[in-house]
Length: 161
Image 1: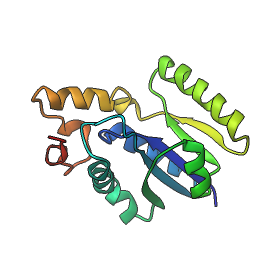
Image 2: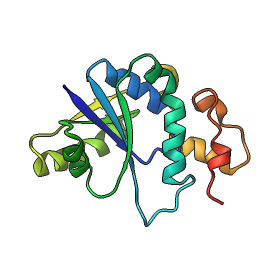
Image 3: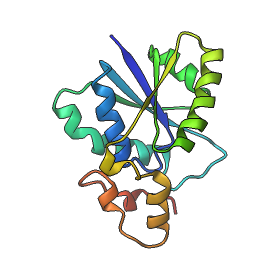
Image 4: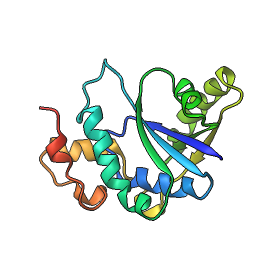
């Protein structure tokens, strides 16, 4: 079974992230979405809230038989991959700047874990501009971000106060 690990803060999980998951399911038998936890960052949404939002966002995929798991983790992504028996790391890229940054991280991961490969995936063209940063900015400034989230997801109830 080819298992891939899709790490991120997902603060919040957007339709762009979901596009990357959908594309990844074309290549891999199982996709594990890893919600990274960093105690130094407060975040807009708690780790538990992010996991709930991801669960809501991918419910339709799972209902159609997609093999997706959502976990939280701390520490190095390569260690989380090993715990999950994942030989691939999925990274979403939107721009050349994303690619350059992610490429450096992929090279470091490859040096630390030669048995784990990074695969770069794009969101669909219509969602390629969507980022958690944009959604956070909309939310923090009182806007309505629902068009950038999966239908039925209400991030407002999960906001850290």
